[in-house]
Image (tube, rainbow, N blue to C red; front, side):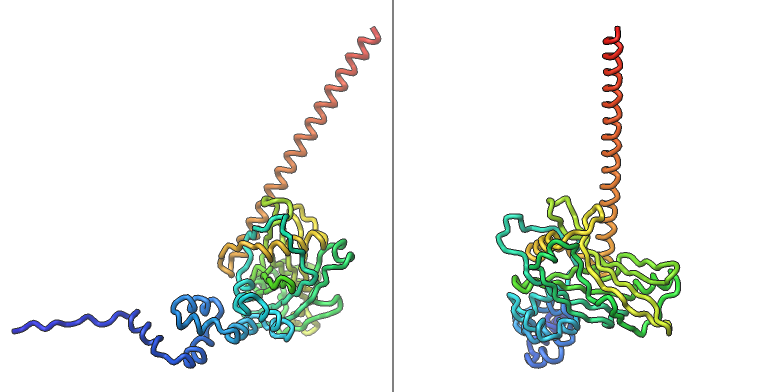
Length: 342
């Protein structure tokens, strides 16, 4: 009996590739690519020449940007995104990663001037659903800005943003609130067409005031300072919430400040230089958005603690040296006086 040759079935990879190649571009663009999020779409663009051509369409990336960050849907920001080097696609690639121990590759000889205007696109989410979307423009060319402590407030002092979220009544529910809330703070340089996300995505700390019940959530990113590569700066974002008369949570403050490793808030001029360097020459370490910001913040706190301990030891050594010097001087003076009297 003759033996028949059985050909092996085609591999899954071959079937998938031929299937994608056989699909009409309109089907891919309308029914498949529009269902992907930004990171998945960016990965798909590297898989195939055909997919790359379809997945780099500006309209597709505008839809992804505005769905990811509702604050970017204003005509002003839509125009700004389109003016980026590769349009909204490069805006997304700059704004989506979180800055983890960001260091600056640009040097002090950088000839470009700091931006005269910063635009902040801020979005706050609860369980991944947006509850606040704001855009804030900051003029940076005035003397008042440069000589004052750097601070950007998204809400006016008397503004209150109500929500349907139940305000936490104890420390446990406050911590749970911190797990459910995420924040994006994209800062944009309108002149250089650059952007970066200064938030840690999830809160790095949650504090509840024992008397008033006010809850303060802190988000942070760590930037390279202006004193060399060993000096770091914390870009801290604070969201303050309290309870309404009916028990729902309301947001009363959303602000951003920069402080050095000694806990001193930086002035506008210093902060502008640091932000400009971070926007122009940032080196971002890829980390998980859920926990990477917190891990970087804890590393920063540990560095602050070690720095403080070194400073205390140095001050103690200097104090001891001063005491020894005073003792030697007093002894020498006593010997000289005794000899003089003789």
